Image (cartoon, rainbow, N blue to C red; front, side, top):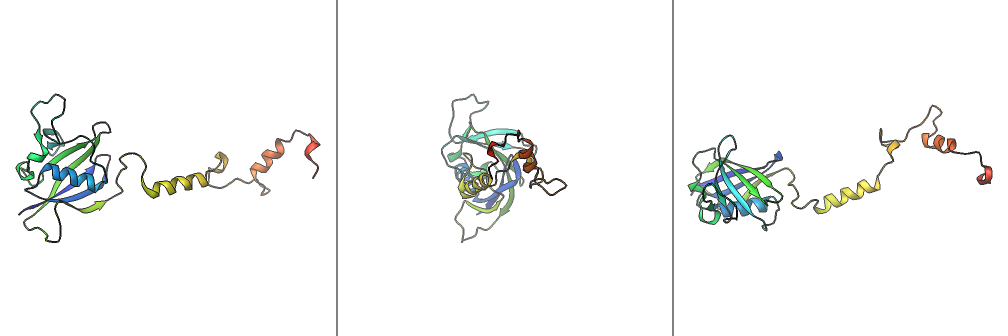
Length: 193
């Protein structure tokens, strides 16, 4: 049984991609689920694949379901279409669109065909992850929370941001000290110390 390996690039940054291995007899619905899982997206939104050529032009649509929109040709349904029926060349490409409101676009390219499957793997499976996945709904995880806390903790004043340090004059005094002294209006009422 042939195993197809697809590389799924996030359209916004080609250095972020996932490689998914899947049997040629499995469906586009199974590929759809594997892509979402590999990018840690939920499965709550509309989705569609488009056949594509080497110039990434959209061809026949392979949709999760038939949506209420105009079609040039009736879409194929993901759960009814085996991958092998749509792979016509060894460099086959597809465009995958998820969540029509957020417009997540992924470029999918067939990068390898193996004649033998790995008995240790359960297909479809993500076999390679490159780059940090985009967050489906904004910030996610502890990294973002810690990053926000660090930004808040080290929030610098505008004059201190130039070089990352405060500025000093020729005498080694802080510029902020001079500013405070210059702001003294001569009222000695507070000079009790």
